[in-house]
Structure formats: structure tokens, C-alpha cells
Length: 271
Ligand code: TYD
Image (cartoon, rainbow, N blue to C red; front, side):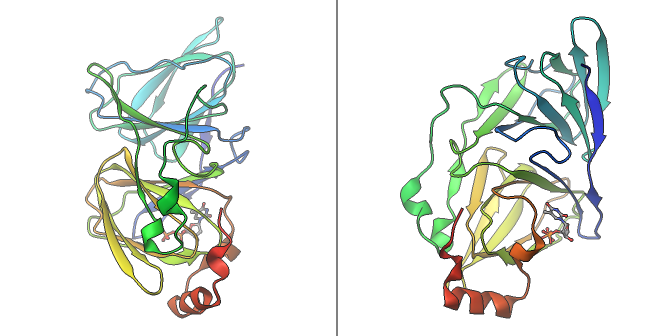
């Protein structure tokens, strides 16, 4: 089995581009773990895969790098430099990330969790169904001088839900806005894996503004919260980890409908 390149959907928009993938589409596995590597010194060689038992999907969310694969018969080099392409690494294939460009972000999605991963999040606050239930979760920042930093999310461990879908916003012109909707049952975590942006949260009663500007700091957005993203810095990338697959009927796109929805309290059905 060798590694294969896959194109992801790219939804182009004057407010920036969006790409996504979810459990089994187009990757052939269910997402169990997501990690991202950042602040890697330019030219460095970075991490090998931890285990040959898992499948992986690797994306250059920003910048570029090579993935060198070895299935013990053939060695191949894949150059990743587009946010909408991913490299699928089957089980049994060893890989290394090399020639990392300055400011690049590698996202690696894996079919199995890190053994012994623990729940680290603050459950009490997360029970609230208003803007205060949207907590900021600080992930550990694993650091190595020569290889940069990485952060990891395992299903239901560092974050309070299982990951079914990943999407990300990139090429967002500086100062643009995104979002402007709520979800009925979707829970999400947003990360500024590059640059920064502001998230305006609104539960129909109270508004709260959160600035995201660290790759290891995520904002939990619960169902029934209206959100708008704005003040994107240039070159910023918003990585979203979502609890469910894409479903247009889960969106509330009109603010008046959102207020009605809150009043009817249907949003209490959570993750
Ligand atoms: P939307 O969630 O409205 O983006 P934003 O809130 O950032 O403006 O999504 C934009 C478009 O992309 C919308 O037409 C639906 C499509 N889309 C998918 O097909 N799958 C996905 O996972 C996401 C997030 C969006």
C-alpha cells in the first residue's frame, strides 16, 4: 500500500476559502485524533508517525513541506503546498515530514487515539447553555527546539466531544468577517492555527467577544449560540473541529429565527 493524494472540496468566497472532510468522506476512516504542528524552524525535519497501526491524513494548512513515505519496498516524496490537498498514509507506511517552510502548519488526522489520553477540560462551565458555556480550552503545547510545537486533540479527551468533521477557513482577506449563524445541535471548537481573529458570541441575551491568536487555544462553541468571526489578520487560518457531519438543516441563518429558537429553548439538545 502506498500513500495517495486527495483533493478536498474548496468553497471559494470573496470572504476567504473553506475546505472540509469528515468521517469516511473522502478519508477511509473515522477521525480519532487531530494534531497540528506549528512554529517549526524553516527547513527542519519534523515528526515521524507514532505508530504504523493507524491510517493518517496530512494537510499543509499553511506553507509547505515534504512527506517522505517508506512502505519498506518503495520510498516516495510528496510535496504538500495547497490547503485543499491531503495525503492519505495507509497502515504500515512509515513517514517523515521534511523541508518545512517557515510559518507552515501541518494538520495530521489519525484513525486511532493516543493511548492513555485523559479528559482535560472543565466540565462545569461547559454545562451552561449561554455564552459562558463557550469556554476557552488551552491544549498542551508539546515543544521541541529543533522541531517546533504541536498540539493534539483526541476524541472526547482534550475536548468534550468526538470529532466527526474538520473544516478550515484560509485565504481570508485581512479584516473580513465569516459566520453569522447558529447551529441547532452542532458543537465546535475553533482554533486560530495561524494569525488571529475575533469571535463574537451571542446567546440572544448576552454577547461576548473572544480573540483567538494562539494555535493551542481553542474556543468551544455550543449549540444554540450565534457566532460571527471577524478581524482576521492576514495569513490567518481558522481550524474548526466539529462534532457532526455537515447538515444544512442544522444551521439557523436568520437572526430573527435564532431569537425565536432560543425562546423555544430547543437548543438544550446538545452534543
Ligand atoms: P458556512 O458554514 O456558511 O461558512 P461561514 O459561516 O464561514 O461563512 O459554509 C459556507 C459554505 O460551505 C456553505 O454553502 C456550505 C459549505 N460547507 C460544506 O459544504 N461543508 C462544510 O463542512 C462546511 C463547513 C461548509
